[in-house]
View (cartoon, rainbow, N blue to C red):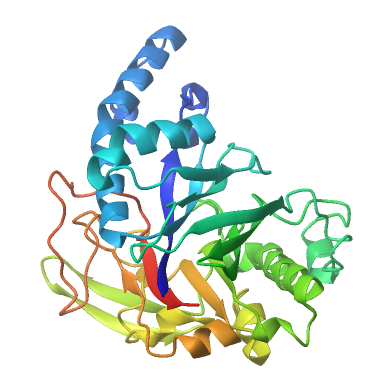
Length: 369
């Protein structure tokens, strides 16, 4: 008996229009900057037209990526709300996979943009085993003080002990698959900051992500007991906005690209790997073949890195020691440079930068419970 578990940052699956770009250029789409729009009503009409025109291609590509992952349980990030999830599943995903994801779960979290984590589940695995939700819990209201993860690095960043730990949520789901238990923790950690801000955004925001990771581990250890957690079936899934390693990309399209593996000295995710608490199963792939996102600030700063994770408990990882996760990269835009031997056939209508399935790639692994 096995179950396919996936995570995917679907990138702004929203039902709202954002008109803040009329007054804030940093929030304005680049295509509208080509036009001199002095009237707010005209700007709103143009923004609505732009978003609607781009959305259909984007969501078809998102659905294709999810269909190729072919997961029984799918953890999503950047979902606006349940109506958005229903509309996407019915209007797009259903056309790709059929009547597959009838169980949908989302609880509103803390994100100021209103994007949440969510979970889609089939009613049965491909092997006919029933997938049943036993319980679901949000940890969005937990504070640094509640989980005893406040420290001086947070104080220096002007964070208060009574602030909420999770920038979105840590959504905890108890599931039974063919009667066997699996507990999921679905997260979307603090971003690495605005790409236009000066300084190292990753290091500047590291204390917050470090606290989020400690909070997730604390929740798991409080639930199962620190000495027993390793023997339980749990997985931590989501966009964690940090990496323990990256592939530095140099060169250009014209001159050709070179790819250099680089290990990071510090990462918020060290909290999970410490003492063998959990295993990042994507590390079972080759060093140049673990990336789920391409980051670029021009030719001088570009790298491939893993931001999307499925961390397995020690027991679950050991039981599935030979399972190698898949990374679905067919929805990446053509500007993404692929190391030699990793090239894929992009989906129809993929653009240089957009449309695309998402800036992230789905990660999926088949697990025996």
